[in-house]
Image (cartoon, rainbow, N blue to C red; front, side, top):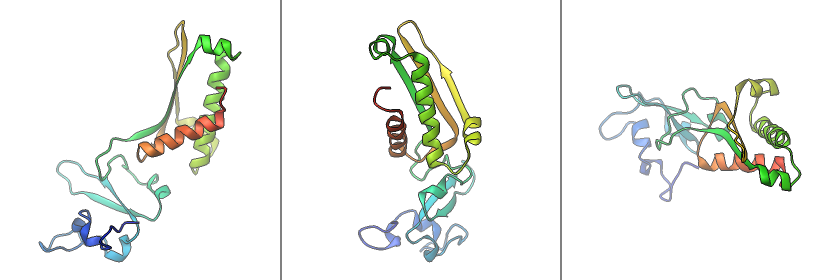
Length: 172
């Protein structure tokens, strides 16, 4: 819902750039009010000497398909789907879990979580995975990153991490 307590788009600062205003300026009259009412307005590009660019989306799922979505209206840095695994070798021994099990189980859950939220096949997901290991004598550390997807905010990253945790199971 793009309206606020006063019930008018006029009170939202972003809209002064989208529509003709008292100064007679707008973003090339790109949108009229009906096109953005109850929609997501996403700032997709803003280089130092270029005019801001916006796109309108009906649903948050459409945002992932927009080019250069790494620029946000509120200036947040991009977040990627990432899991860092630090498993103590002592804890793994106590739980009778082998390090390969930990990695394979969590990696599999990570891929399953991506498959649930993305509109693409397994092969595409596997192509975008980056996996690194930095284990030592006391722990096993794995870092799993999916580079093609940017998450919108920390709440989406948290929800993604919780989904991976749920799919993996408590033992791991």
